[in-house]
Length: 475
Image 1 (cartoon, one colour):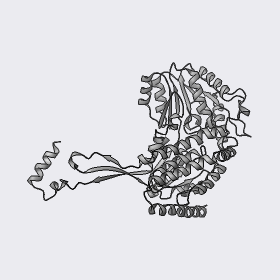
Image 2 (cartoon, helix red, strand yellow):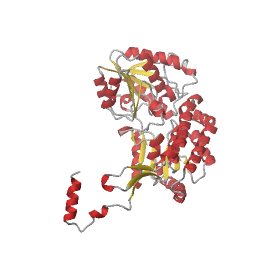
Image 3 (tube, helix red, strand yellow):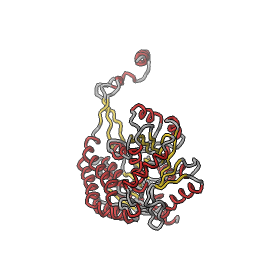
Image 4 (cartoon, one colour):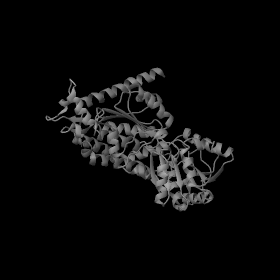
């Protein structure tokens, strides 16, 4: 294993070094070059989306092509096109006002490419979470290396092959491989490293990156809550929460992890969730719009969470009349509500990443806030309330990576908003201009005037200097 890791590290470093040498020869690509690279990335996605979706479908055992187009193809193309439209404005030097003491000098920020960016993408959205950060890195003028997930080998092989077709080997490189390759990749001296995945692996990535003081952006996850306020229509909340929980069979970092409802409304909420399931996913065992769990290991993890809850006497309610139990042979896991589960269950301590949904009662919104704040900071928060003042109060008293009010996921879909976590759910952000700035050094520049008066502060210091300093200190 050690020899294999060493060989992987040598091979990866050679790839990185070639990109770095090319970047040194052209360290500040002009707008046309950046737009050409973004157009190549757009063509990669647009011309091959069907093939990529088929590869993802094969990796999952079932991942609806329409869902892949909606959740990966569409937002990936939007990210690329948004960057291409705005990159000219983003890369323009930004003037700033100099302080009174440094006039008539001028100041500006010059967005500078960082060099070679490393991107570690996950298995749950193998296209989107490779392409969206790559678009930001290319817009910022960088070269990039992608580490694709071994959990979705067909999709990774397809993407790696397409990268060689649409990009020169000194612009973008994609590598495949397992944990050993991932560990070696994280130790490379990148200008910036972005990792999307689980929290425990993110900690290892950060430790590896520290060897070269590589700055990192970590997009992790956590237990993203949905709070349904008193008086909010349960039918609407249930439909949106159920959809967020069932898209990609719950294998989404911003999926609602649990839902908080007013005490006494638990049964009505479960009934509304069940009605939403029957409406959105009828005949679940044969439903073509519902994804499978990606691998046997991930299926077994979910089955273990469910079995622990069942053994503890938790109230487990199937949300589909046609499919009340998981199907191990096909890795098909139906949505199940767990009403007021004991707090010590793994279900309540770990990110679920599947279609299990705890439904938990609260006495008042203060109690709901305490429940959320007693846990690690989530990647997303969902608030269902039509009272604007109460919504503002909930936003002020909680902390999360992002928020959608009266729906799910939409703060992630909006390119003008940064996407990222905080605390246990990650650090840093990208999407749109935030992504451009993540992969840039906003280089401060001071332009001194020929009429500068800073000579007045030169030594030798004397009475004239003291009078001037006393005058300056009064302002």
